[in-house]
Image (cartoon, rainbow, N blue to C red; front, side):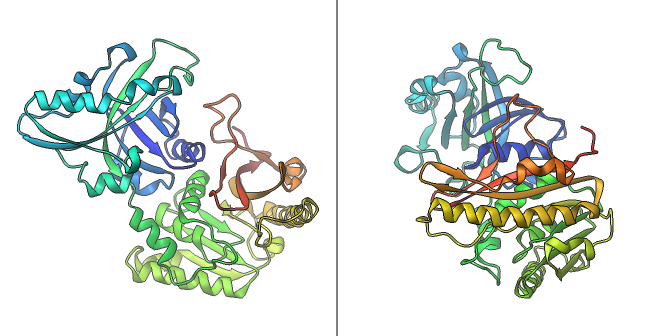
Length: 413
Protein backbone atom coordinates (compact mmCIF):
# COMPACT_ATOMS: atom_id res chain seq x y z
CA UNK A 1 0.00 0.00 0.00
CA UNK A 2 1.62 3.23 -1.14
CA UNK A 3 -1.25 5.73 -1.21
CA UNK A 4 -2.04 7.67 1.93
CA UNK A 5 -3.88 10.80 2.98
CA UNK A 6 -3.22 13.61 5.42
CA UNK A 7 -5.61 16.19 6.83
CA UNK A 8 -3.79 19.45 7.45
CA UNK A 9 -4.37 22.13 10.07
CA UNK A 10 -5.57 25.73 9.80
CA UNK A 11 -2.69 26.80 7.54
CA UNK A 12 -2.83 24.10 4.85
CA UNK A 13 -0.37 25.59 2.35
CA UNK A 14 2.28 25.93 5.05
CA UNK A 15 1.52 22.41 6.29
CA UNK A 16 1.74 21.04 2.74
CA UNK A 17 5.12 22.73 2.29
CA UNK A 18 6.30 21.10 5.52
CA UNK A 19 4.99 17.73 4.40
CA UNK A 20 6.70 17.80 1.02
CA UNK A 21 9.95 18.95 2.63
CA UNK A 22 9.88 15.88 4.87
CA UNK A 23 8.79 13.57 2.01
CA UNK A 24 10.52 15.05 -1.07
CA UNK A 25 10.06 11.86 -3.12
CA UNK A 26 6.30 11.70 -2.55
CA UNK A 27 3.93 12.29 -5.46
CA UNK A 28 1.01 14.59 -4.69
CA UNK A 29 -2.09 12.99 -6.20
CA UNK A 30 -4.77 15.34 -4.86
CA UNK A 31 -5.07 18.40 -2.65
CA UNK A 32 -8.44 19.85 -1.65
CA UNK A 33 -9.13 22.35 1.15
CA UNK A 34 -7.04 20.82 3.96
CA UNK A 35 -6.58 17.27 2.66
CA UNK A 36 -3.76 15.79 0.59
CA UNK A 37 -3.35 12.39 -1.04
CA UNK A 38 0.19 11.12 -1.59
CA UNK A 39 1.79 8.20 -3.34
CA UNK A 40 4.79 7.49 -1.13
CA UNK A 41 6.97 4.48 -0.35
CA UNK A 42 8.37 3.48 3.07
CA UNK A 43 5.40 4.98 4.90
CA UNK A 44 5.53 5.10 8.71
CA UNK A 45 2.33 6.85 9.76
CA UNK A 46 2.99 6.85 13.50
CA UNK A 47 6.46 8.34 13.11
CA UNK A 48 5.22 10.91 10.61
CA UNK A 49 2.36 11.97 12.87
CA UNK A 50 4.80 12.66 15.70
CA UNK A 51 7.11 14.58 13.38
CA UNK A 52 4.73 16.95 11.56
CA UNK A 53 3.47 20.14 13.17
CA UNK A 54 0.87 21.03 10.54
CA UNK A 55 -0.93 17.69 10.09
CA UNK A 56 -3.86 16.77 12.35
CA UNK A 57 -4.76 13.29 11.03
CA UNK A 58 -3.48 10.78 8.52
CA UNK A 59 -4.20 7.31 7.26
CA UNK A 60 -4.38 4.89 4.36
CA UNK A 61 -6.30 5.07 1.11
CA UNK A 62 -8.60 2.03 1.12
CA UNK A 63 -10.59 2.76 -2.03
CA UNK A 64 -9.84 4.62 -5.25
CA UNK A 65 -12.64 5.11 -7.75
CA UNK A 66 -14.22 7.57 -10.15
CA UNK A 67 -16.81 10.15 -9.11
CA UNK A 68 -19.67 8.38 -10.81
CA UNK A 69 -18.84 5.03 -9.21
CA UNK A 70 -18.69 6.25 -5.60
CA UNK A 71 -21.79 5.30 -3.64
CA UNK A 72 -22.71 4.51 -0.01
CA UNK A 73 -22.40 0.77 -0.59
CA UNK A 74 -18.79 0.98 -1.78
CA UNK A 75 -17.85 3.10 1.24
CA UNK A 76 -19.75 0.80 3.63
CA UNK A 77 -17.72 -2.14 2.31
CA UNK A 78 -14.54 -0.47 3.57
CA UNK A 79 -16.01 -0.38 7.11
CA UNK A 80 -18.10 -3.54 7.45
CA UNK A 81 -16.56 -6.60 9.09
CA UNK A 82 -18.15 -9.99 9.59
CA UNK A 83 -17.34 -10.24 13.29
CA UNK A 84 -18.67 -6.83 14.39
CA UNK A 85 -22.23 -6.48 15.60
CA UNK A 86 -21.82 -2.83 16.62
CA UNK A 87 -19.58 -0.10 15.26
CA UNK A 88 -19.14 3.66 15.19
CA UNK A 89 -17.86 5.70 12.28
CA UNK A 90 -16.96 9.28 11.42
CA UNK A 91 -17.16 10.79 7.95
CA UNK A 92 -15.59 13.88 6.35
CA UNK A 93 -15.56 14.83 2.67
CA UNK A 94 -12.93 17.19 1.24
CA UNK A 95 -14.35 17.93 -2.18
CA UNK A 96 -14.84 20.99 -4.43
CA UNK A 97 -17.64 23.37 -3.48
CA UNK A 98 -19.84 22.20 -6.36
CA UNK A 99 -19.69 18.61 -5.04
CA UNK A 100 -20.39 19.26 -1.36
CA UNK A 101 -24.17 19.08 -1.60
CA UNK A 102 -24.12 15.48 -2.81
CA UNK A 103 -22.22 14.48 0.34
CA UNK A 104 -24.54 16.14 2.85
CA UNK A 105 -26.67 13.00 3.27
CA UNK A 106 -23.96 10.53 2.28
CA UNK A 107 -23.07 9.41 5.84
CA UNK A 108 -26.70 8.66 6.63
CA UNK A 109 -26.86 6.51 3.51
CA UNK A 110 -23.68 4.68 4.59
CA UNK A 111 -25.24 4.13 8.00
CA UNK A 112 -28.36 2.66 6.36
CA UNK A 113 -26.28 0.20 4.30
CA UNK A 114 -24.35 -0.90 7.37
CA UNK A 115 -27.58 -1.52 9.25
CA UNK A 116 -28.84 -3.62 6.36
CA UNK A 117 -25.69 -5.69 6.75
CA UNK A 118 -26.70 -6.42 10.36
CA UNK A 119 -24.58 -3.89 12.24
CA UNK A 120 -25.72 -1.66 15.05
CA UNK A 121 -24.30 1.64 13.86
CA UNK A 122 -23.60 5.09 15.30
CA UNK A 123 -22.50 7.96 13.07
CA UNK A 124 -20.24 10.23 15.13
CA UNK A 125 -20.41 13.90 14.13
CA UNK A 126 -18.60 17.05 15.21
CA UNK A 127 -20.17 19.89 17.16
CA UNK A 128 -23.04 21.53 15.25
CA UNK A 129 -22.54 19.14 12.36
CA UNK A 130 -18.96 20.28 11.75
CA UNK A 131 -16.00 18.06 10.94
CA UNK A 132 -15.17 15.68 13.77
CA UNK A 133 -11.98 16.84 15.48
CA UNK A 134 -8.84 14.69 15.86
CA UNK A 135 -9.34 14.74 19.64
CA UNK A 136 -12.91 13.46 19.20
CA UNK A 137 -11.68 10.74 16.82
CA UNK A 138 -9.39 9.49 19.57
CA UNK A 139 -11.91 9.94 22.40
CA UNK A 140 -14.65 8.06 20.50
CA UNK A 141 -12.15 5.28 19.70
CA UNK A 142 -12.70 5.58 15.97
CA UNK A 143 -9.13 4.40 15.37
CA UNK A 144 -9.98 1.00 16.85
CA UNK A 145 -11.45 -1.71 14.62
CA UNK A 146 -14.32 -2.23 13.86
CA UNK A 147 -14.85 1.51 14.31
CA UNK A 148 -13.60 3.82 11.56
CA UNK A 149 -13.02 7.44 10.67
CA UNK A 150 -13.61 7.78 6.93
CA UNK A 151 -12.20 10.61 4.82
CA UNK A 152 -13.21 11.21 1.19
CA UNK A 153 -10.94 13.39 -0.95
CA UNK A 154 -11.27 14.68 -4.51
CA UNK A 155 -9.75 17.84 -5.94
CA UNK A 156 -12.06 17.93 -8.94
CA UNK A 157 -9.12 17.50 -11.29
CA UNK A 158 -8.13 21.16 -10.78
CA UNK A 159 -4.77 20.49 -9.16
CA UNK A 160 -3.16 17.68 -11.14
CA UNK A 161 0.61 18.04 -10.69
CA UNK A 162 1.27 15.97 -13.81
CA UNK A 163 -0.52 18.57 -15.91
CA UNK A 164 -3.28 16.17 -16.93
CA UNK A 165 -7.01 16.21 -16.26
CA UNK A 166 -8.44 12.68 -16.59
CA UNK A 167 -11.78 11.55 -15.23
CA UNK A 168 -11.97 12.82 -11.68
CA UNK A 169 -10.65 10.34 -9.14
CA UNK A 170 -12.09 10.03 -5.66
CA UNK A 171 -10.01 8.65 -2.80
CA UNK A 172 -11.53 7.06 0.30
CA UNK A 173 -9.23 6.87 3.30
CA UNK A 174 -9.38 5.38 6.77
CA UNK A 175 -7.72 7.35 9.57
CA UNK A 176 -4.88 5.58 11.38
CA UNK A 177 -3.28 8.38 13.43
CA UNK A 178 -4.35 11.73 14.90
CA UNK A 179 -2.34 14.57 16.36
CA UNK A 180 -1.65 14.40 20.08
CA UNK A 181 -3.11 17.76 21.14
CA UNK A 182 -2.12 17.22 24.79
CA UNK A 183 1.56 16.82 23.94
CA UNK A 184 1.61 20.03 21.89
CA UNK A 185 -0.28 21.91 24.59
CA UNK A 186 2.14 20.72 27.28
CA UNK A 187 5.12 22.13 25.38
CA UNK A 188 3.24 25.37 24.81
CA UNK A 189 1.62 26.04 28.19
CA UNK A 190 3.32 23.54 30.47
CA UNK A 191 6.92 24.68 30.12
CA UNK A 192 8.28 26.73 32.99
CA UNK A 193 9.25 29.89 31.07
CA UNK A 194 6.89 31.82 28.77
CA UNK A 195 6.66 35.40 27.55
CA UNK A 196 2.99 36.04 26.84
CA UNK A 197 3.39 39.80 26.65
CA UNK A 198 6.30 39.83 24.23
CA UNK A 199 4.73 37.20 22.00
CA UNK A 200 5.38 33.50 21.77
CA UNK A 201 6.25 31.44 18.75
CA UNK A 202 3.71 28.55 18.77
CA UNK A 203 5.44 25.14 19.01
CA UNK A 204 3.53 23.84 15.97
CA UNK A 205 4.80 26.72 13.85
CA UNK A 206 8.33 26.24 15.20
CA UNK A 207 8.14 22.55 14.27
CA UNK A 208 6.93 23.34 10.74
CA UNK A 209 9.77 25.81 10.28
CA UNK A 210 12.34 23.30 11.57
CA UNK A 211 11.01 20.71 9.15
CA UNK A 212 11.19 23.18 6.26
CA UNK A 213 14.90 23.62 7.03
CA UNK A 214 15.66 19.89 6.63
CA UNK A 215 18.65 19.93 8.98
CA UNK A 216 21.12 17.20 7.92
CA UNK A 217 22.02 14.43 10.36
CA UNK A 218 24.77 15.69 12.64
CA UNK A 219 24.37 19.22 11.28
CA UNK A 220 24.25 22.54 13.11
CA UNK A 221 21.08 24.58 13.58
CA UNK A 222 21.07 28.16 14.82
CA UNK A 223 18.32 30.44 16.13
CA UNK A 224 19.86 33.91 16.55
CA UNK A 225 16.65 35.32 18.09
CA UNK A 226 15.92 32.35 20.35
CA UNK A 227 13.59 34.03 22.88
CA UNK A 228 12.47 31.29 25.29
CA UNK A 229 13.86 28.52 23.08
CA UNK A 230 10.82 27.20 21.22
CA UNK A 231 12.72 26.53 17.99
CA UNK A 232 15.53 24.81 19.89
CA UNK A 233 13.07 22.57 21.74
CA UNK A 234 11.33 21.49 18.55
CA UNK A 235 14.61 20.99 16.72
CA UNK A 236 15.85 18.72 19.50
CA UNK A 237 12.67 16.65 19.29
CA UNK A 238 12.37 16.51 15.49
CA UNK A 239 15.89 16.34 14.03
CA UNK A 240 19.17 14.47 14.26
CA UNK A 241 21.11 17.72 14.47
CA UNK A 242 24.50 17.42 16.11
CA UNK A 243 24.47 20.99 17.43
CA UNK A 244 21.51 23.17 18.36
CA UNK A 245 22.56 26.74 19.02
CA UNK A 246 20.54 29.65 20.30
CA UNK A 247 21.37 33.26 20.99
CA UNK A 248 19.47 36.35 22.03
CA UNK A 249 20.33 39.92 22.90
CA UNK A 250 18.52 39.61 26.25
CA UNK A 251 20.13 37.63 29.07
CA UNK A 252 16.68 36.82 30.46
CA UNK A 253 15.89 34.94 27.24
CA UNK A 254 19.04 32.87 27.63
CA UNK A 255 17.95 31.90 31.13
CA UNK A 256 14.44 31.08 29.92
CA UNK A 257 15.77 28.92 27.12
CA UNK A 258 18.06 26.99 29.44
CA UNK A 259 15.20 26.43 31.90
CA UNK A 260 12.93 25.14 29.15
CA UNK A 261 15.63 22.82 27.78
CA UNK A 262 16.18 21.42 31.27
CA UNK A 263 12.41 20.94 31.61
CA UNK A 264 12.29 18.85 28.41
CA UNK A 265 14.85 16.50 29.91
CA UNK A 266 13.21 16.40 33.35
CA UNK A 267 9.91 15.43 31.67
CA UNK A 268 11.71 12.62 29.80
CA UNK A 269 10.80 14.22 26.48
CA UNK A 270 14.50 14.28 25.68
CA UNK A 271 17.32 12.00 26.73
CA UNK A 272 19.67 13.55 29.30
CA UNK A 273 22.52 13.24 26.82
CA UNK A 274 20.74 15.72 24.55
CA UNK A 275 22.02 18.52 26.80
CA UNK A 276 25.35 18.16 25.04
CA UNK A 277 23.77 19.31 21.78
CA UNK A 278 22.56 22.63 23.18
CA UNK A 279 24.65 25.77 23.11
CA UNK A 280 22.92 28.94 24.32
CA UNK A 281 24.65 32.31 24.62
CA UNK A 282 23.96 36.03 24.68
CA UNK A 283 24.55 37.89 21.44
CA UNK A 284 23.10 40.58 19.23
CA UNK A 285 21.97 38.84 16.02
CA UNK A 286 23.37 41.77 14.09
CA UNK A 287 26.84 40.74 15.30
CA UNK A 288 26.40 36.96 15.31
CA UNK A 289 29.40 36.47 12.98
CA UNK A 290 31.62 37.40 15.93
CA UNK A 291 30.29 34.42 17.92
CA UNK A 292 29.91 31.70 15.26
CA UNK A 293 32.80 30.25 13.20
CA UNK A 294 32.68 30.84 9.44
CA UNK A 295 30.83 28.33 7.25
CA UNK A 296 29.73 26.19 10.21
CA UNK A 297 25.92 26.49 10.19
CA UNK A 298 23.67 24.14 8.19
CA UNK A 299 20.34 25.79 8.99
CA UNK A 300 18.99 28.95 10.55
CA UNK A 301 15.44 28.74 11.89
CA UNK A 302 14.16 31.83 13.66
CA UNK A 303 11.22 34.11 14.23
CA UNK A 304 13.26 37.24 14.69
CA UNK A 305 11.83 40.49 16.00
CA UNK A 306 8.20 41.17 15.06
CA UNK A 307 8.16 44.69 16.44
CA UNK A 308 6.56 45.92 19.68
CA UNK A 309 3.19 44.47 20.84
CA UNK A 310 0.26 46.05 18.94
CA UNK A 311 -3.23 47.07 20.09
CA UNK A 312 -4.76 47.05 16.62
CA UNK A 313 -5.54 50.77 16.37
CA UNK A 314 -2.10 51.98 15.25
CA UNK A 315 -1.91 54.52 12.43
CA UNK A 316 -0.42 53.67 9.04
CA UNK A 317 2.46 56.05 9.75
CA UNK A 318 3.22 54.29 13.05
CA UNK A 319 3.18 50.84 11.40
CA UNK A 320 5.41 52.09 8.60
CA UNK A 321 7.91 53.14 11.25
CA UNK A 322 7.81 49.70 12.88
CA UNK A 323 8.26 48.01 9.51
CA UNK A 324 11.30 50.18 8.86
CA UNK A 325 12.84 49.23 12.22
CA UNK A 326 12.20 45.52 11.69
CA UNK A 327 13.66 45.72 8.20
CA UNK A 328 16.80 47.42 9.54
CA UNK A 329 17.28 44.65 12.13
CA UNK A 330 16.90 41.93 9.51
CA UNK A 331 19.14 43.67 7.01
CA UNK A 332 21.98 43.70 9.51
CA UNK A 333 21.21 40.22 10.89
CA UNK A 334 21.22 38.59 7.44
CA UNK A 335 24.49 40.37 6.66
CA UNK A 336 26.06 39.01 9.85
CA UNK A 337 24.67 35.51 9.30
CA UNK A 338 25.97 35.21 5.74
CA UNK A 339 29.61 34.30 6.53
CA UNK A 340 28.57 31.74 9.18
CA UNK A 341 26.55 29.66 6.68
CA UNK A 342 27.66 26.65 4.72
CA UNK A 343 27.05 26.84 0.97
CA UNK A 344 24.09 24.46 1.28
CA UNK A 345 22.51 26.20 4.28
CA UNK A 346 18.81 27.01 4.46
CA UNK A 347 17.38 29.99 6.36
CA UNK A 348 13.76 29.76 7.51
CA UNK A 349 12.61 33.06 8.98
CA UNK A 350 9.49 35.01 9.92
CA UNK A 351 8.93 38.40 8.36
CA UNK A 352 5.96 40.23 9.93
CA UNK A 353 3.33 42.24 8.12
CA UNK A 354 0.80 44.65 9.62
CA UNK A 355 -2.59 45.80 8.41
CA UNK A 356 -3.67 49.44 8.47
CA UNK A 357 -7.27 49.69 7.26
CA UNK A 358 -7.07 47.87 3.91
CA UNK A 359 -3.35 48.37 3.39
CA UNK A 360 -0.78 45.70 4.26
CA UNK A 361 2.55 47.03 5.51
CA UNK A 362 5.65 44.84 5.45
CA UNK A 363 9.40 45.43 5.80
CA UNK A 364 10.97 45.82 2.37
CA UNK A 365 13.73 43.33 3.01
CA UNK A 366 12.44 40.83 0.40
CA UNK A 367 13.38 43.19 -2.41
CA UNK A 368 16.93 43.43 -1.00
CA UNK A 369 17.68 39.70 -0.61
CA UNK A 370 19.83 39.50 -3.74
CA UNK A 371 22.10 42.32 -2.58
CA UNK A 372 22.49 40.48 0.75
CA UNK A 373 23.49 37.23 -0.97
CA UNK A 374 20.23 35.30 -0.61
CA UNK A 375 17.38 34.12 -2.80
CA UNK A 376 13.90 32.81 -2.03
CA UNK A 377 13.39 29.04 -2.17
CA UNK A 378 9.67 28.17 -2.25
CA UNK A 379 8.89 24.63 -1.00
CA UNK A 380 5.80 24.37 -3.25
CA UNK A 381 7.42 25.52 -6.48
CA UNK A 382 7.26 21.98 -7.91
CA UNK A 383 3.53 21.77 -7.17
CA UNK A 384 2.25 25.17 -8.26
CA UNK A 385 3.36 27.39 -11.11
CA UNK A 386 2.57 30.31 -8.81
CA UNK A 387 3.00 28.92 -5.30
CA UNK A 388 0.97 30.55 -2.53
CA UNK A 389 2.51 32.72 0.16
CA UNK A 390 3.31 30.81 3.33
CA UNK A 391 2.06 32.48 6.48
CA UNK A 392 0.71 31.87 9.98
CA UNK A 393 -1.88 34.06 11.69
CA UNK A 394 -4.50 33.39 14.32
CA UNK A 395 -7.80 35.30 14.03
CA UNK A 396 -7.13 37.51 17.06
CA UNK A 397 -3.58 38.52 16.10
CA UNK A 398 -2.62 41.92 14.68
CA UNK A 399 0.60 40.62 13.12
CA UNK A 400 0.81 38.12 10.30
CA UNK A 401 3.87 35.88 10.33
CA UNK A 402 5.11 35.43 6.76
CA UNK A 403 7.37 32.39 6.44
CA UNK A 404 10.35 32.85 4.11
CA UNK A 405 12.67 30.04 3.08
CA UNK A 406 16.02 31.34 1.81
CA UNK A 407 19.08 29.76 0.28
CA UNK A 408 22.39 31.31 -0.63
CA UNK A 409 22.63 32.72 -4.14
CA UNK A 410 25.40 30.32 -5.14
CA UNK A 411 23.27 27.27 -4.36
CA UNK A 412 22.02 25.13 -7.23
CA UNK A 413 18.44 23.76 -7.40
